[in-house]
Image 1 (cartoon, rainbow, N blue to C red):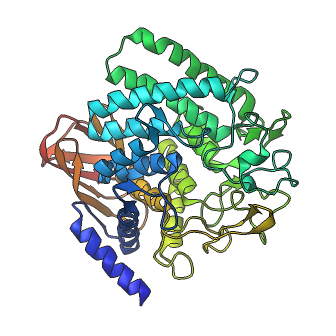
Image 2: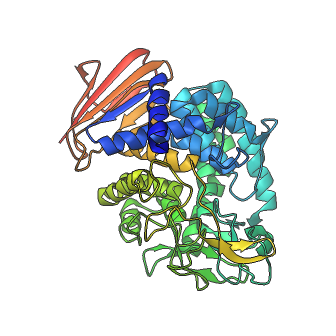
Image 3: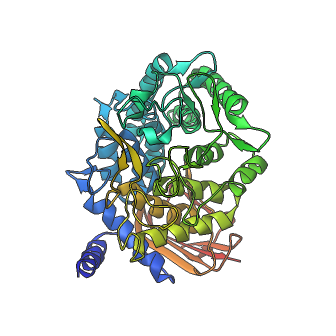
Length: 471
């Protein structure tokens, strides 16, 4: 009965919204509608919250949810949410190590909306924060940024010696010696933020000389990531360098994704990184393999377990390098995790067991408490926006650029048509229809007229109907 009521509310809420998505795959349709409804239900007082059991106080959650689709589907809410985690729009707030991801999300918001006033203030906020973090969290010896890995504020994301069994706390910063560990995902995000600052400067038509020191810092950071964190023998990346200089060679799903998405490695190496990643039956796990204190019977909360947000980025990376088999697996897995009666049962949970697909919060220390089993929270926003992003980036092939949208769609087996209508892009009312199979474009039409390139200019106004045929 509860499921029937929720589905009715879902359908009614979706009907009220301007955008509609439809494909010839009903499970995909249900999952997308459920995802959009989750975003809307989790919007409180105009702010995107992290989930049904969480508030909106995490910079990374708001940044990722905006980047994954809220800036496109709910731009006013995304903008208000992005500013809500800043200090007077002058500096980015909250947990220090990964808050710089806000810079990338803010620029993506500009690419979608074209709002130059927002971009001007976002640039100042981003620049000020980067200077602050360079002074606070940069290890001069390695030329890398310090702190936990992105979103991993829980100590279950770390093995000894970072994990200290004598410290009864779930917070990774209570175990870490301040500003010592250097993690893959965090440093990739800093690199992405540097490159984003450069793009912001270009869009604001700032003097080219202003970018010179930032370009140098970006190039140096990229070089140091490759030097210290790339495992040339395995053709992939290590997870981190600990406080003693030791290397943890674990596979960090988010770190691999960011290394590919921010083009830290060339395309042939990037393809190898994605193709050879260890992936569970329900998608890539956060960190593989199990640390010694965990196991398939006792899964670590931030260790070898599925956080769908990670899968969203990993599917993006797979599409970027053309490893569509991986994309298919991640898309179908997330649909299954969200919809199947023995799994999410029409709910995007926070965390899932990689062996059973059931919601599972995993094990982790608590305050004055040994390792115990945590809950997987319901209606998690970034689990939902991960699915939205898989559709927008993969099936529809949306690539937001400074001067328009480049289309690189892909239709896998089981989907021969996908359509998003009623979407707003800058000054255009956008309808996108993808037909066929695969990723090769046979025909690209705008308002019925064949176009030379699969590109929609940012200057387009009014109704814009894009129809793409694939072969």
